[in-house]
Amino acid sequence: MRILNLASMLGILAAFFLCLPDRGGAQEVSGYTVITAADLKKMQDSGKEMLIIDTLAESAYKQGHIPGGKNFEFPNGNMDPWDKSKTASRSKDDFVELLGRDKEKPLVFYCLDEK
Image (cartoon, rainbow, N blue to C red; front, side, top):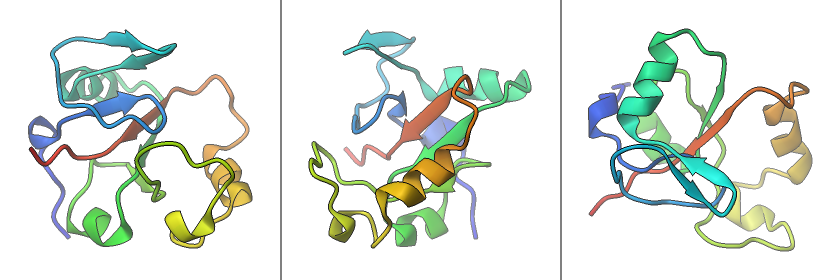
């Protein structure tokens, strides 16, 4: 398995269901902080504990992902109510389990902007 270079990853996000290209510097979007790949690399290098979630299909995740990233497939856009056909048959309970009990731990959701 190859691990993607962080510099090649665009749209590193701390926002759920957002998939935006790298715009340079952290931004506030709808109450979430959008960060760049460089920001994430600095956070990782500092040893900051966080949960990194790759929202792409498992096949794309297997081709390469950010080191330490966990895969949980999500569609772009709103998914209300929960639709297991859009999350590789994983339930909301599976997602809650992935998130864990520590509600203070930063969550980083990302996808790859292929533009």
